[in-house]
Amino acid sequence: MLDATTRSGGTATATPPAAATELASTPLPTGRPALAGPAAVPAAPPRWARALLSPWFRLSLLVALLAGAAGCVLAFEPQRLLSDGWPAQLNGAAAAVVFAVAYGLCTVAFVPRPLLNLAAGALFGSQLGLGAAIAGTVLGAGVSFGLGRVLGQDALRPLLRARFLKAADGQLSRHGFRSMLAVRLFPGIPFAAANYCAAISRMSWPSFLLATGLGSIPNTAAYVVAGARASTPTSPVFLVAMGFIAVPGLIGAVVAWRKRHHLRGR
Image 1: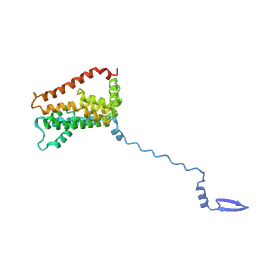
Image 2: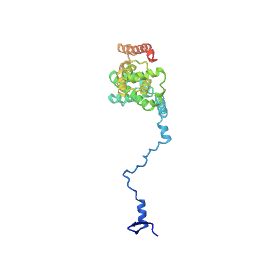
Image 3: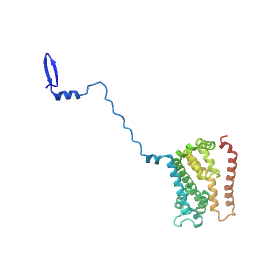
Image 4: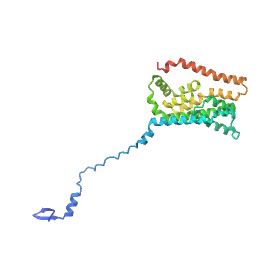
């Protein structure tokens, strides 16, 4: 039985079945490139991964880290440095470096900076103590700023709806260096609160760190000198240091009172 025939000049020619199958399966040229298949769609991350990356999970992690740090401070009581002194095996510049690192970590855990500054002066004297205290201040502020920026900014920025919060955020975002410099010069604003408020804003890292380092010098120096001269509380140097502690706080309170309308957005 013939599967296909062709006629040429009245003569019938049979085409074998295999050849007919091959001809039927050969695509005809169309002059157009073959259409590519659909692009591969990347698989969506699993639900647990989305939960771990969510802003609110990161904010919860930040709260847990800060609570754990505060618990460690309560357990180890770093304020004992003022009464027990620095370990005898650590001295000189190496001891100041270790103290600066410990200072920074303690500020992240909400240890009051005045206490740490007094300890720096009592342990290392005015000059070396001031260097260690400023280094620790910048380190602790940078760690707090980084934690707030990475773990808290995405969750908290949508909550800045009150007029006061919007005004403060706009001031920090547009005039980061001078705003943070003013905050550091006047000690009325808590150190940790300023760090995390700046992290939630759009202030840049260099502006924050530079303003923190420069603005913290006067108040830190006053506490360090007071700590170094605590054994002679009636000396002129100690009394001048105490005056530098009290006067900026008073000036900061007056400026904040006069600028309260601007912070409310009026």
